[in-house]
Each structure stands twice: as structure tokens, then as C-alpha cells.
Image 1 (cartoon, helix red, strand yellow):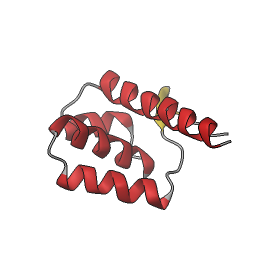
Image 2 (cartoon, rainbow, N blue to C red; image 1 turned 90 degrees about the horizontal axis):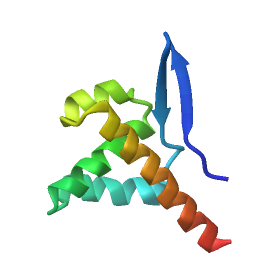
Image 3 (spheres, rainbow, N blue to C red; image 1 turned 60 degrees about the vertical axis):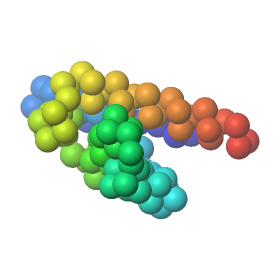
Length: 89
């Protein structure tokens, strides 16, 4: 089952996407670098940063989103991947 991870460090809950497949990483990297839609490019950047365990607070600062928006993107990517996975089985 695909899941996302939460870690507690110094009283702050961190949220990360589950490990991406190499195919997903390549696809997201292409969107992040060559995407014509800025919104999708930034979302791809958030997911890629979360994949390498960058804390939500740091992602938010670099991308220019609030930490809540970063958490929403990570959580929604989890739900999308879960739906794709369930369709394959």
C-alpha cells in the first residue's frame, strides 16, 4: 500500500511523500523543468523536494507557498497515487 510519512522532530510534524518510482521522478522532473504551467511546475518541485525528505517549512520558503499549501500538495499527491495504484490492481 502506498503511504505518506510523518515524522515528529522537536515537536513539529513533518510530512513526506512516499518514495517515487524512477518513472514518476523523471516525469515530475520534466514537468518541473519544462512545464508551461507554472502552477504544475511548482507542484512538481514540491513533490520532488518532499521525496528527498526536505522539510515542509524549507520547501514552503524556497517555493514561496505557505506551509499549509505545501502540506495540501503532498497529501493530494498521495491520494492521486493511491487512486492510480488501486486501478492497476
